[in-house]
Length: 316
Image (cartoon, rainbow, N blue to C red):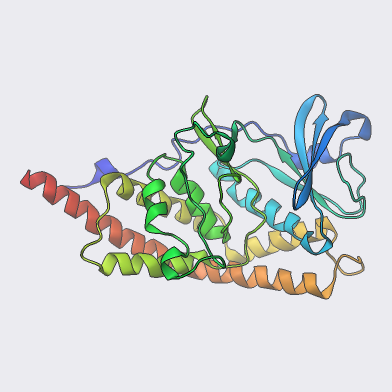
């Protein structure tokens, strides 16, 4: 029997998150932009502003050696835009004066406001137990690294969670904690935010190795809900590979870097920044090589477990 009943129509769950062109509102004159307030966190300054009466968020890192994070945040949001799973992010140049920039000579990012609130703040929310962070440097061993069995189980809780796991894999995002994930109970939708710890590691190859172990283990079984989540995860990765070549992503990486002010002749363009951009470039190339391997093992797991579920159902 064919398994068409399991196929998830990938884009049917997406609804539009209200956004406007960030590049357009950054160019607006100062009289249209009003600063509401600024909040200081451990790592950055977060300012809320209004442009023509609509609220936006301006974020600027506090340390000089963290300024390149604006490039990664903007690049991740740009790549995720077609999936309608993240808010819009754009860069405010280091050369541009703008309300909410605490250091006038450093770049910043401007964001549309994510609907709902962070999962961390919604303690009574049914998703408050989510633990989607794919550990990297902080992991104690291989079992705790990357795509764990717990994450696989939890990404089946909601139709959008495999999409978020998918972009985190493609972007090398190991910082998807509950403060970087918003949920709106009114619309029953998630929104991925704060994707500035990205493009510096290849999480796809780690996920591939871990799933290979699970596939070869006869005692590992996945539920029908988890199989459906795997299908959507595979579709997300396929979407990224289909819509973006690694060379195009790299071009956009440097376009955002130049927009921020990281270019020859600017004092921000230090040897350290050059090394970091080269690292991001190499990780993008490596991830785009690893992703097809990950899709292949996902396909094997899907087929194996679908047959297992079908045979068990037939015998019953």
